Length: 142
Image 1 (spheres, one colour):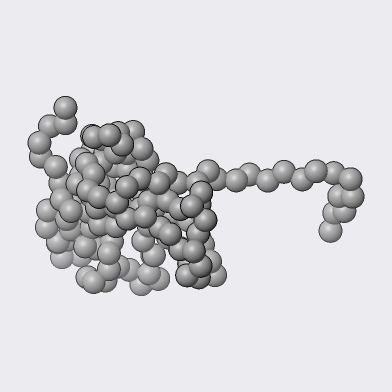
Image 2 (image 1 turned 180 degrees about the vertical axis):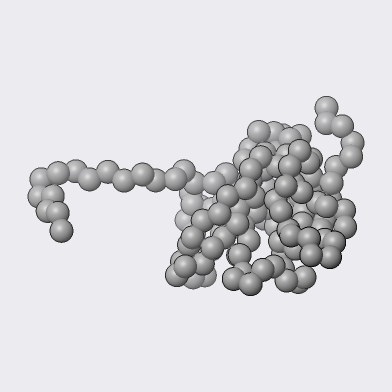
């Protein structure tokens, strides 16, 4: 173990995600990533940029737990994948994040006001997430 008696230690810190009013937004998918969180739980993060309206350019995400044995038909990711795809997966088809690529989607957001233990977050640590994908936008953006 290293001893740092008179040293200042610095650590990387992610910035807090954006906080936007709850509502429906038109977004563009930007990328997907996975991360291991809490006791070896893997989460899938889908990142989007608000593409229209007064919050244009704001980045928001949807987070999904990744089950060890694949996504079931009742999972949020399966539901959102089917909505973005326009249909359920074919027989033996895998659920790829490719289905979100180059898509403009309508989503519903919600504000996260409590941490994973149910404790109230201070206002400067509250943020917004995509609660669900409502559909694929077919009208061109202005």
